[in-house]
Image (cartoon, rainbow, N blue to C red; front, top):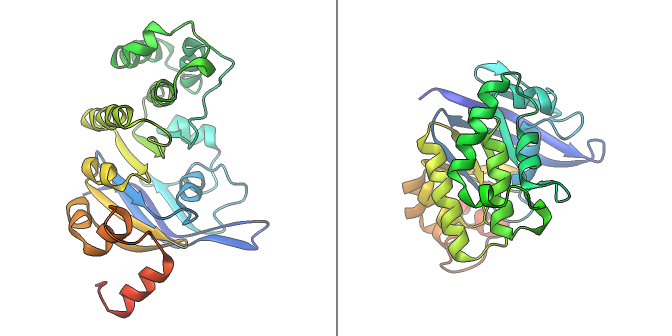
Length: 260
């Protein structure tokens, strides 16, 4: 299947190149699919999304990022949004001092097709009726789940080909998490590809088609979502069976030659 987004040997560092976080990362997101990126805290998952979006100055320091067959390494975030990539960061990134309606309007700021943008905004709001009811309310007064819905809705107003989601379930009640993942599946059903970073691996692998495991800045495993769910090591590390995730665990399993 044709890759919508692809990364080849990407290396990203902080502190003027002294702290290497991503180490030769290669991966792909096929058109129309959900790809889950799993990994323990500090593995580099958020850094990977920020690298794709060009929000880390002068990074990546090595490797290439391509979207729709075009090299986008070093592009400005605004240009990437116009090209068709939308990003919902960890913590949602909404403007709490603005109303719900004003936040949604900002989602269309990169679009030049104003009539189509208004039509898309109306369609997005129809998908999130709670936001229509809260249109004049300050975003900062919404519940956590409502704020997450607003962040996703604002991204969809951009009419993206690819949606990057960073920890969409973070801090939400189980009932709200289920609703967020229902929305994610629905968005993908409309043809939008999604790269999903999510600590709730069980939910992520329920909606994903494919997945990668990132540890210490390296991809250590790539399989279909079904294969990852059935993988004993993934079950132990990420699905709540056995020990918590650890780099030591990956090394131990490599020594046992479990990775093909």
